[in-house]
Image (cartoon, rainbow, N blue to C red; front, side, top):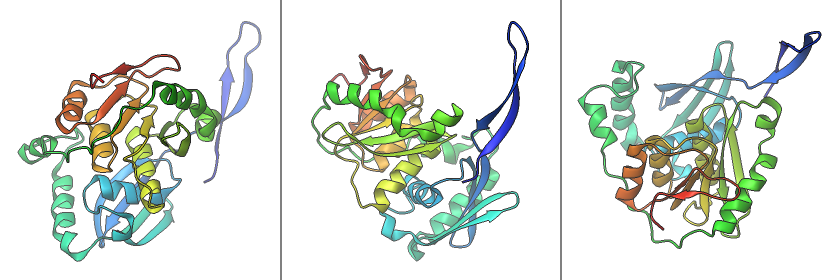
Length: 258
């Protein structure tokens, strides 16, 4: 991925200084399944194979990475295009959801059909042991070292998977918090690794979509740096997801009551 460098002026008490600063790249990424335009996302154009895999899992079009075939990523003068194929028995679902998306406005959740989708049941989370608070604190302390793009730009989110030993095993970055998580989900799926042990750690606030993506991907515990919304708490409780938020290097809030 190319770097984007902007010239900026830094005001000071004495003479303003001009400097060059790396900026996080945000570009339109068009996703096509089975030749059908499905969505256009604003994303950081890195790890796009992971992104489309995780996105397809989050959308419940596939359950495993090997169910997504012929992934092709193309650079376009106006952005990026990702093309992939899902199984033929999912083609009707692709077409119907693509049709619904065309009818949506930018509010994100419009119409009876989408309101029903928000309340659709989530799979029950598998039984799991509470994570060690020492592992949470250690992962938070180490996370910055696994965020090279954020270190360079100060403007991207990260999603990480922390294994049973408390070690950060996989990290993906993106300007969008949902995209970062989709990239992580896709990366783990393409490596045939499960999210059911350890925990998912994100640098964002915890919206209901973050909860849903984590649960659908098989996570049992979600740790977020910022606070959850009311629906996020309710959705996590409904399926047994352990939800830890406002996580810092020495404290956190467990919204699951564990």
